[in-house]
Image 1: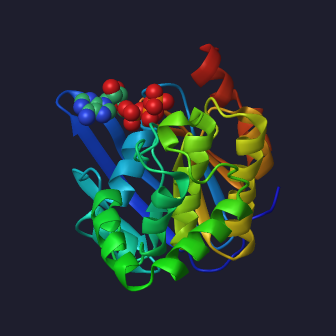
Image 2 (image 1 turned 180 degrees about the vertical axis):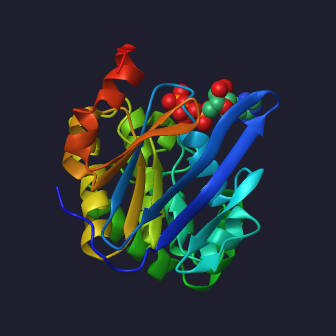
Length: 259
Ligand SMILES: Nc1ncnc2c1ncn2[C@@H]1O[C@H](COP(=O)(O)OP(=O)(O)OP(=O)(O)O)[C@@H](O)[C@H]1O
């Protein structure tokens, strides 16, 4: 585990709240992601983890609160936020099943210009009509870096773990300042899990940041610099992974033990 630095935050989440009807999905949540940080959001199903990622990336709008990237308040669409340096993956991987791994990775190369997957994909093919060889070569190199074996088969033929890996590779192609990963290790095979963990370490070593949502306690312990434990949309604990895992709050949230 790497400890976080005392430098200025890359990402500042301040007082985010969001309700869906009567359900308070997240309530007054704040945390920072500093250069080299891997901040894990953990908690039981329905705790508010995906809602937080959705709000940070602009997929959902908060009722209250603010998100800043390198000191600038983020507003507007996911496309705009991707241009400003965010990338994300989804709990249900957003890869086009009829397309190959390479075709799915190419839009990430253009992620700085256009962020959403569908918009980027359209744009990418316009870009490809200008420089197809360069784009395909770059995507091939990225696929190889993450050990994606069959880059020319449709992703519909690939395992869930490989689809997740393709999605991570596409996000990494945009060289994000902060990468938001929503359950990247769920149902993965050992190879894809190790490759995705490698992407997390790469981001960390390059002085960028990661927000990681996952239920895999061992990987959270290994990769995270900080953990934010959520329960019913509220922060139950925030701190280093080892402290979090042994905290009374963790036992209360997961096992209902009284503290
Ligand atoms: N679009 C929505 N409409 C209505 N309720 C929603 C919506 N999205 C989330 N919720 C509710 O908000 C709460 C938080 O959900 P969220 O998906 O953020 O939790 P989570 O921690 O990511 O859960 P999981 O681990 O199961 O993915 C839950 O009660 C959920 O049912």
